[in-house]
Image (cartoon, rainbow, N blue to C red; front, side, top):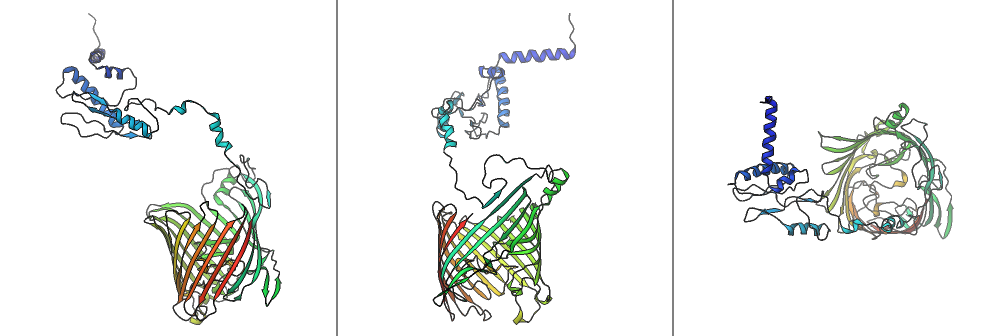
Amino acid sequence: MIMLQPRLSIQCLVVLSVTCSLTMLTPADALAQTGRPRPTRLPIVAPDSSPAQQVHNHAETVERDEASRFQLPPSQTEAGRFPQPQPNYDFASHSAASLSSPDTAGQSVLQEESAADFAKSAGLGNLTHFADDFSPTPLPEQSNWHDGAREQWVYDAKAAVPTQSPWIEWGRTFYGDGITPRGKNWFGSTNLARPEFYLYGDFRSGISTGRNAAGRTDNWASRLNLDMDLRLTDSERFHGFIGPLDRNNQFNRIDFQGGEFDYQGVFDPNFVTAFFEGDLGAMWGGFHGKSSPAEMPVTIGLIPLLFQNGIWMEDAVTGAAFAIPARHSRALNWANFDWTFFAAIDQINSAAFGTDKHAAQAFGTACFIDAYDGYIEAGYAYLRDRDDTRRSYHNMTISFTKRYLDRISNSLRLIINTGQNLPDADVTADGGLFLWENSLITASPLTVVPYANFFYGWGRPQSVARAGGSGGILRNTGINFDTDGLNGFATLDPTGFDTAGGSIGVDLIGNQLDRQLLVEASYLTEHGDSNLAVQGDQFGLGSRYQFPISNRTLLRFDVMHGWRSDLPNVYGTRMEYRWKF
C-alpha cells in the first residue's frame, strides 16, 4: 500500500473534488472555465434547487461578486431571486451592463430591443451581439476601409491665415512654422537662448471736428507707436516703446483755427517704456544646470503697470516689480492667486501731485484671486511726496467679479484715498470711487452684449498713477467718458470728483466678429459744489463703429453729443485710420 503524505493527500482530495464539481457544471459555466470571455449576465434559478443546481448557485455567487467589482447597480427583484443588474450603458467603454431579465421558467432572456436601441444611438446600424460581454466593440462599416483622400483633406483644406509681419524680425520669423530650433547654451542647458529682435506697433491717423471741455477740436492728428522687443530666452527679454510723434499728450497734427491751417510738429525719440523682464527661477536653474525650482517673474526699468483694466493704475514708471504666481490656499478656499509687489521711484503721473511727474514715489502690492465662484483684485499703495510729506497718502482698492444666474456678469470696484494732511482747499487725493459694472449674457453672448455701468464718487478719488493719454478714472464706465488718445475727442467729466452717474448701452459685434457697433447713453450729476467742471446734470449720447479693411488696417468712426447744465455743450465727430504692423 502506498502511503501518501498528509499534505499531498489533501491536495489530491482538492483536485478530486474540483474534478467532480466540473462534471456537474452547466455548459455556460464550463465555458467560463476554459478561459474564454464569460458573459457578465447572471443566470437565475429557483431557491429550491437540486444538488447540481446548488453547485450552479455557487458559481452564480462568484459571478455576482465579480459583477459587483464593476459596480453594476442591483435592482429589486421578486422575493427568493438573486438581484440582477439594471440596463446601464457605459458609453466610455462602449460596453453595456446586464440586459437580461428572468422569464416565467426562470431562464435568462436577452433584451434584444435594448441592444438594438443602444446600437442605433451609437450610430452602429443593426447590431447583433451579446450585450453583457467584454468582446471587442463593434465598429461602423466605414471604419473597415481606408480612404486616403478623406484623410488628406484635413491638410488640403487648410489655408494660410493672412498676417502682417513686423517691420524688423531678426532671428526666428514672428509667425514662422516648423519646429523651434534648439537654442544656444549661453545661460545654461535648462534655459536655452534663442536671440530674436522685433520692431512692431501701429500707426494711427484721425480727423476730428467738435468741441471738448477746453474748446474747439478741429484737427488732423497722427501718432506712431513703436515696440522694440529683444528676446534672449523663452522667459527673458528687453523691451522698449517710443512714440516719436507725440509728447506730453500732444500729437503731430494740423489744427484748423479761424479759417486757417496750423501745423504743430511734434517729435520725441525718448523711451516711454524701457525695461528688462524675466523669471528668477528660470535664470537660477540655467546658471546651475538644473530645472527651475520656482517661478518668480521680475522686471526693472521704466516699466508699464496696469491694474484693474487701467482703473487703479495705468502708467509707465521708473521702478521694479516682482510677482509670486500660481498659488492656492486651502485655508482661505482660494483656488488660485497671484501676488505682485512694486516700487516706483520716479516718473509718476498723477493729478494728486500736479504736473510734476518727479514729485512722488509709490510702493505697493496687488493680488489677483480666483475664489468664491468669482474673481477678486485687491491692492494697496503708499504715495510719498518727495518734498511735502503732507501730500503723501494711501491708495487702496478691491474688486469682485462674478456671473449670476448665467445671465449677468457683474463687477464691483472700490477705490479709497486717505492720509493727506492739508487744508481742505489744498487736498488733492481724498474720498473714493465706487464702480458697479454689469453686462447681460444674451442668447448671442459673443455678438450682442447689453451693458449698464454706474459710479459714485466722493471727494477727489485718484488712481495710483495715470499716463496723460490714458484718460480719466471713469474711462471704462462708457465711451462717453473715454478719450480717443489722439484728437482730444469730447467726453463728459471723467474724474468722478463729487459726481454720480453711469452709462447704458449695447455692444453689437458682427456674426463673423469682423465689425463692432456701440450705442450708448450716459448721465452724471454733482453732489456738492467743489467740481467746477460739473455745474448740474450732464447727459451724453454716443456711438462708435469700426470694421477692418484688411488683416492689418481698420477704420473707426465716433460721434458724441453732451449736454451740460450751465456749461457749454460738448460734441464731436471723428474718423480714424489704423494700421498695425
